[in-house]
Image (cartoon, rainbow, N blue to C red):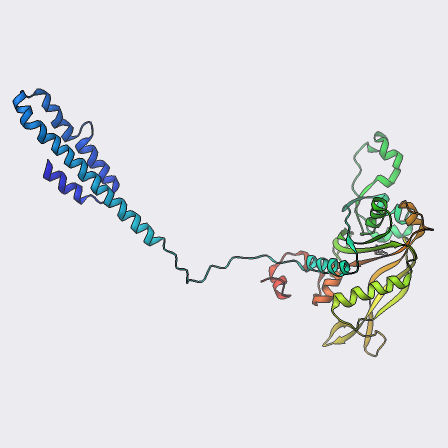
Length: 358
Ligand code: PHE
């Protein structure tokens, strides 16, 4: 048995084989275990003669199994270490990385520009009620200006009117909608923090409208300043400073044109002058030069005293100006993008084309 065991253990190539050999020799039914059992039937003399030999054999086989097992384990470890070696000089596989969306980028830039002028950032809910979106902005029920907003209203739950006392008391002003502009944040900020105020309010707004220059969801930044003795000159300086910083051009020329918004009085629309270069509109210079033009950019005005009043402030003490500008529009102008819908398609090739993806 001894020499047979030595050669088969030496030839074993895996831990599995070692285990099988252990069972074959030393297991309950193993051949060495069988030899040990024969000791019981021997005479004392025979046992004295055979016992030590069998025990020595068992010892030897146990040791051989252990030694071969250790060898195999060591070999397996070496093989694994060799296989798992890292070549640190190889180029690393490319990990896909995201990038900042142009809309977010522009909102960040605006927040930074206005922070330098002392403006904080305020926010309001996208699901708004009729009162904040319209009524408190001097657009009572049936005001014709409401028709221009293509509002998404939430359906009222069946039986809500009549069953809901609060809603009844508030009438239609509790009706919920997706805000059509960021102007309700003016009202919310005045109510929540009083005066003086210097904020911008960036965010999503919704109107039921869709073509190359309109998407049902788009972005605006509202600006609001409420203080003592604020006048149109402050508005003009603020808009000029912000547009020059945003477009990184000192030659931006602004034209203020009388307009109408129910929540500002007087209301002014701001146009910027542009030139045509290689068939493309490039901002800068007066729009009155030959071959130039004016582009409508944003709505603004002095906050209507009725709005200040409805927002809980005394309009004889506090005045201010407000403006609202389309963020997507600003991004298109700054980065030369021409289809608004592409902003929300989520196509990385489009982002990459305009240098927004690594
Ligand atoms: N809320 C207006 C709009 O969405 C813009 C605006 C804001 C005009 C503030 C005046 C003052 O068209």
